[in-house]
Amino acid sequence: MTGLSQKRSRWTWLPSLYFAEGLPFVAAMTVSVIMYKRLDISNAEVAFYTSWLYLPWVIKPLWSPIVDLLKTRRFWIIAMQLLLGAGFATVALCIQADNFFRYSLAAFWLIAFSSATHDIAADGFYILSLSDHEQAWFVGIRNTFYRLAMIAGQGLLVMVAGYLENETNNIQLSWSIVFYLLAGFYVVLFAWHRKVLPRPGADVIGVAESLGSLLAKFVHTFVMFFKKQHIGKVLAFLLLYRVAEAQLAKLAPPFLLDERSIGGLGLATSDVGFVYGTVGALMLTLGGLLGGFLAARDGLRHWLWWMVLAINLPNAVYVLLAFAQPDSVLLVTIAVGIEQFGYGLGFAAYTLYMLYVSRGTHSTAHFAICTGFMALGMMLPGMVSGWFQEVLGYQNFFIWVLAATIPSFIVVAMIPLDPDFGREKSEVS
Image (cartoon, rainbow, N blue to C red; front, side, top):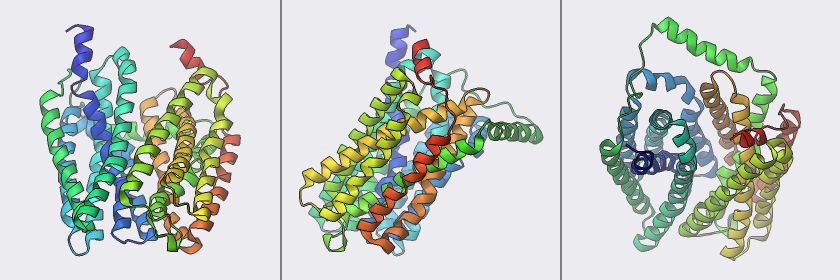
């Protein structure tokens, strides 16, 4: 098969694979927040329980060896997509039941663990199926379709739910239909990938080792990570760089939805899907692209302080929105777009620093450990954010979020970083 025909064949499965990877994450982390808010669950409960859904991504490195040893990556991808379809169908069933909050959360746990396992298998399959050149060629494609999944999830799906709410006057039924649609979509993805995913020769079941040998290698990988120079400063950065954004992300959709009489903006569900899920996600993507370009051109160190300013200072737009409570959806859209653009720009620094920390032996495993700490850094602040908001009210909560940006500046001042990191790699490539 020629190089051109190989690239064409990749298009039959690679975009849909990474779209399938992104959609369950955004469903568990963002769509669930909006849905529970519309179903009259308190902010404290929504933030606390949906933040726990980060846990599978926190501990993902602990069971990644199982994916390698028990079955092929292709098997895990297909199996998890079928399980995700079942999980979404279960959510749809639970929404209209008594004690729907408890039962639907259990279904979201199934979705979260299935999604994290799918991530492990899909990323491994990407590496095994493509040459080094093809991996570089398709990296932008995979990231683009992952981002499109975010837009489809927190934008299009929420807008559909809002439309159904208006048409049916039944919030529970509307969200149930949305999750049935998701379930059907994953059954289609399961059938499609079962047909088109290649069977690369390198995608084989791992060689079984003794439990003691496997455990020794596993422990050694973790020990080597925690022996890295300045590891305390590195961990502080991973946990605290986004401590303000972690709280804001959980309460921004409820703030947009809540009645004006209790401090919210009173937007319709479909408006939130457009403002936060579509425009916000697009601006987040653009900010991330700009951050990557700037770091590649001048090095991460050159732009680091600008990026930490970008991820933190635009949070002030929520203070302005909380005090002014504007009626104009356009003004709200502009404000949210500014904050999300800054988040995307600032998050580029976080991603690049994880790559910097992971360099050397065990780079893949160490990057996975970094992503675990990244998820933990979002999970812990998010859990208490709803309680803070209910105690403080929206206006004072967003002022608190601004104060919570201070640790981000402190850890950036502490971390070790080569001045040419990013620029050097770009010049070599």
